[in-house]
Length: 289
Image (cartoon, rainbow, N blue to C red; front, side, top):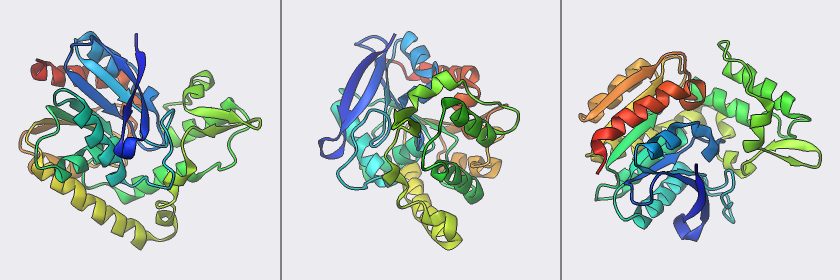
């Protein structure tokens, strides 16, 4: 069972979290992708807690039950600042599991610090080099339906179309974790301003490429600074991280390994939660103290 808790991000911003496992266990932090919430990890955090870790799933700023900043501050570097603040609040370096935005920000945070932040790092379908078409596909999905959905079934159908590959639509009932009802319609449970700096990617490929080059530089600096064990968990059907990009990351981080999860796309934990969870628990075992 989990317990609710909270952290403070950069500037004291309140970040909602759930915690699993014994109070004296070594810390582990789970950071989700853009537009997701702390409920997106399935059983992974619970399984790590059962293995003795003190595992926290955290809502990023502007997501889920966390506070929204007064102004639109949703760049990867803003999320990285929150991650550094959370690490500073812990009594020892954590194991970090970061998906997409969460993994990018975790690498960036390490590049901004002269000391090592983590005891281990799991990157979930994210590398410094990403397929720009895949990234634009995610953004297209997130910017669709600005007026929300009439029913949860309608939202589930939209997610099923996005997931494709015969994965099917999620249970409408489960979507209450990521959607909130307002004025009779269902809206994603995140601050719409987080898309402000990303919408231009859809209209101008040059803007999208420039943003990716900048992000690649920040992430590459973090990869070069990383000294802990690292694991890349890639969805074998990912349209965001190619096998070549995975190999490039492993070359950048000599202590890193990479695995593919068959039957999973970019949303690895959601597509194949059991093998994903096993991979995280197995990677974490030798880091336990």
